[in-house]
Amino acid sequence: MRTEVIELIKGGIGIQYELTVLHFADERSERKVYIQGSLHADEMPGALVSYYLRQKLEQLESENRLNAHIILVPMANPIGMAQSIQYTSFGRFDLFTGRNFNRLGDLNLYEMTTRQLHDDQVALGQDAQENTRLIRQAMGKAIASYQPNNAIESLHHNLVRLAYDADIALDLHCDCWAMMHIYTLPGLWPQLEPLARYIGSHCQLVADDSNSNSFDEALSTVWLKLQSDYPQANIPLANVATTVELRGVHDLRHEDAEQDSQALINYFIQQQLITPDEQGVPPMPNLLAEPTPLAGVETIVAPVNGVVVFRVQPGQNVQAGDAILDLVDPTRGQITTVHATIDGFVYACNTLVPFAHIGSELATIAGAKELAHGARLSP
Image (cartoon, rainbow, N blue to C red; front, side, top):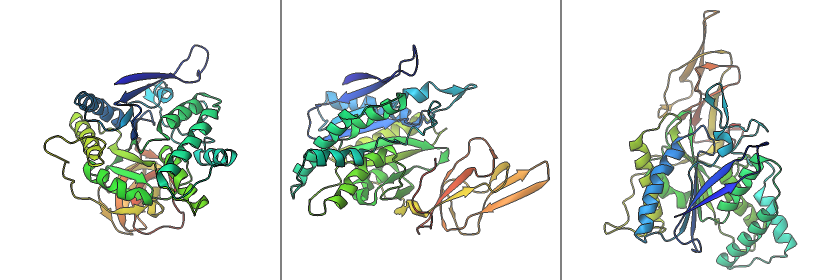
């Protein structure tokens, strides 16, 4: 294992952020895996899973069983880790710019890549492997020329630089109070179904593009868009990227983290990125849920202010009309009950503080049918 420490743009006089990156196996390997934890720096399950994953990867490296260059960034957001307000961690948004750490803003890898392909007059043909090489070459040049203006842009720049040419990229997050679930593109589902089985994902949310420029979509949608731009060329979806939501923010149990890290190892074995032991490829568990459209998610929003009392829990199936939660106003002696408008699966409840202001997003329900609002993610 090689440890790399990357210095980001300074956050101020005397403030230096460092990103710690762990490299496993041959860095010249033809195959590459990228894994990062806790990009939202107040979400620790990914960091805890990374602790156990590091141990397993070190052992596998010593046994010469790694068939790919594997990059692990256990805590991908030193900026957010340094943020706290009155003893409370504040790692979802950058306090300087107000930006979500998982929204890449002006770092648009698709636009950067298409511009570079045009400038270099790259010709793409029917050889998928050669097209992948040429596109990644253009991506690398474009990323190298990008000039970040502040610390969060420096963070995004370095994370994308590490991950853009990976065959598989896993972004480990969590929700507030939730079941295990994943986000990805519909076209990547065949490659990610084994992962969903191994990790026991209860909900698979798919969309071609939520237009949020989240980290995983920044890596994966560029290939989908290039397929549309070059219809005569054979362009694969060469970066199998996904966001893995490791249950809820307080789900920090050693047993779960060890099991989750082993599930990732099992997936890599199944993908031939790790040589199996004498027992062979670990059998895949049953799939717990088929994919549903991200555009089919109903977000339960508070219509009034009040104390939140949930009537359902993550993991429950509900029908349109079912009561989801109550909002209690003790000063007026009133209760407002909020109901589901679709049939679906409650995969997350989204409040850590049990008081809601009007407009607060409180729960999410995955439905089978697309809704009028289209695919979208929370801010």
